[in-house]
Image 1 (cartoon, rainbow, N blue to C red):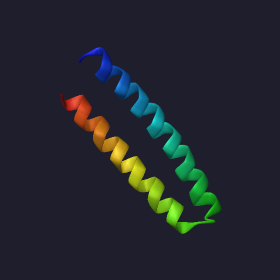
Image 2: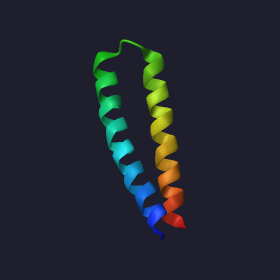
Image 3: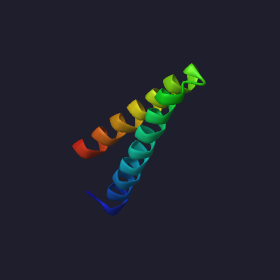
Image 4: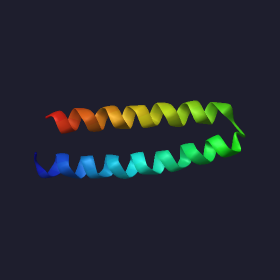
Length: 56
């Protein structure tokens, strides 16, 4: 892995952690059901990209 890939993995891990927190808060409050779907999609996309980067 090169330096750029390692940095991207680190950034994605931080983003995933933040999205998990936002998702938990959104589930507790449930003001906007659409927000929950958007956060879940962003989380899935970030996790997929992370898995792809770790494979290479």
